[in-house]
Amino acid sequence: MPDGGKEMDILNAIDELSGNYTFREQRAGNESLSDFWSNTSKTQLLGVLLAITGNFLISISLNIQKYAHLRLACQANEKPYYTSKLWWCGIILMGLGELGNAAAYGFAPAALIAPLGCVSVIGSAFISVLFLKETMRAADMLGGTLTIAGTYLLVTFAPNVTQELTATKIQNYLISWQFLIYVILEIIIFCILLYFYKRKDVKHIVVLLTMVALLASLTIISVKAVAGMITFSAKGKMQLTYPIFYIMSIIMVTSCVFQVKFLNQAMQLYNATIVVPINFVFFTASAIIAGVIFYQEFQGAALLSVFMFLFGCLLSFLGVFVITRNRKEEHLQVPYIDCGHIPGKKIIDKIQLDSNSLSYGTLHDEDDWTRAQS
Picture 1: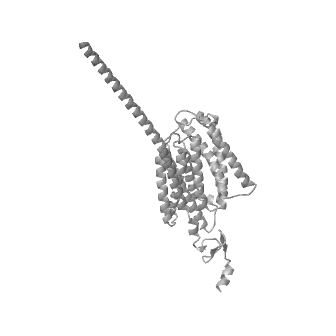
Picture 2: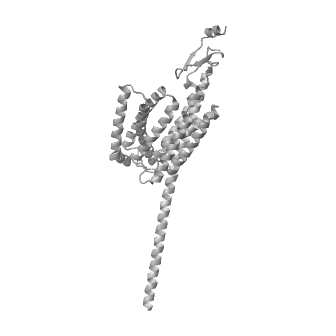
């Protein structure tokens, strides 16, 4: 009996030690997992803050540039816009904003950063009310509310994945079968659209902005790759010596140049209130698809999270459409524009709108105006 009691005591002690070890191991594992998610969330939050700040600076810069053009138009001796210090301040702010956007891709998924471009749209709408004394519409309030709600859902349900983008990993992504299929399809679609654009002279807004979106997907992939390698190099593991870094840099610059070309063509042919919301939707969709296919950002994500993220995108799209809708028609409600500040014209001179076109009519000649008054 005594020996049996001793054996029982030894077994109990072993079980207790084993239980304590298992508990400590589980607790350590939970703490390690908690630290991982905490660090991931902090890194992703930094990317979100950079994107929001960058887009807000862009909205400020657009209003400053617009204000500079208005001031120059009111001067007796009209000067080129690039001589205005105020205009250059706007350009510098835009550069800083775009730099913040590019840096954000190094800290957060592309599927999250791209939709945050709606911040610049609602920012411009509200800043123009304060800075340019434009009228606040009910549509602006509704659109802003929808966009803010969509942004909240985007940030909350975005894929919580922070990748360390090394040169080797990007090379592996480039030769993955899903990306190769995606690139081949994109090239085929782009060539077809380019054929209709060049040979058939088809300049429909959907054709132009689809080409912009196809180029934008390459821009997003390359910008995130470059930003990720620079961020990883800043941590002490140099990636800038690999050829892939310079290849992605060339793709980034080239795609940006042609993207701006087709976007400017769309802006010349169509009103900004049409181009801005459609381009935002196409650009965001292409960025999300690029993130899903190239960087596999939604891999392992819950179905509910994916649904809520897409619902947030939809709310942001609706908000942008509501804000930009009918802005042009409101401006055209004014039948005459005072030309008191136009050189060589008196205050009584006016520009009358041409009801049969989207452009303004001609200035009345002073002699014709005098004869009409007599």
